[in-house]
Amino acid sequence: MNPSNEAQQVIYVVDDDEAMRDSMHWLLEGEGYAVACFESGEHFLAAWHEDMRGCLVLDVRMPEMSGLELHELLSQRGSPLPVIFVTGHGDVPMAVAALQRGACDFIEKPFHNEDLLSRIRRALAVDCQNAQRRSQSSAVNRRLEQLTLREREVMDLVVAGKLNKQIADELNISMKTVEAHRARVMDKMGARTLAELVRAVLQTEGESGA
Image 1 (tube, rainbow, N blue to C red):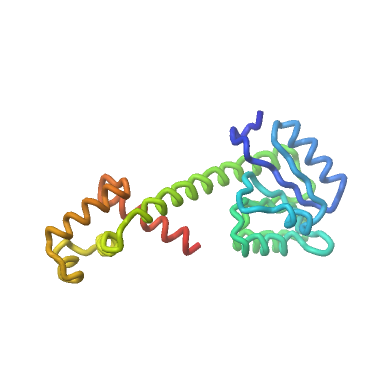
Image 2 (cartoon, rainbow, N blue to C red):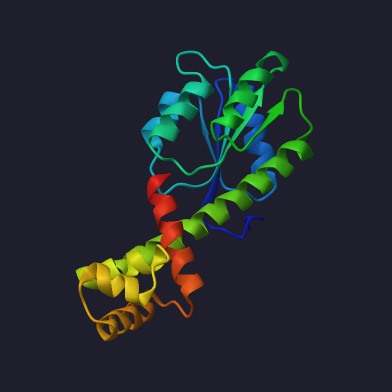
């Protein structure tokens, strides 16, 4: 059984060194993880899809496409997979720069197996958190689609901190109409409080702007 308790999570290993790939495959399968190994960034990109779950263990230095180049391409595609870079000593500055660009972690060769496993466990936890946020964001988007144009206008002004009277004046409608729209917005969005509504909308806007 996968220790992550996420059946769809896979540890993707990308390394041009066959011995390293075999070693990681043996180690990770022995720990109960699902593992998929690739000899190059090109091979991984050919298999990549946006619904992949788990994490990516990625060698920094590879011929043709480097690990850093693969990471950059995945970032451009919006890949949510947490990335753990495997580096030689001289590659540490590059790995640190990759962390600044969104990588999850890095580990230096030679490493102890438990050090790698602990980083993988953290990366899988990050993957679970990311998946939960995406699920919540999708649910909020589905609720937003149920709003009428006027309800959306009222909601946007509510979230912006406008009072009912200000909303009524801005939209040239009555206070009672504002209150009715506001009540329907709260019901359709499944929000019990104004704070819940604001958090849901701001989170969705953050996801779309990421």
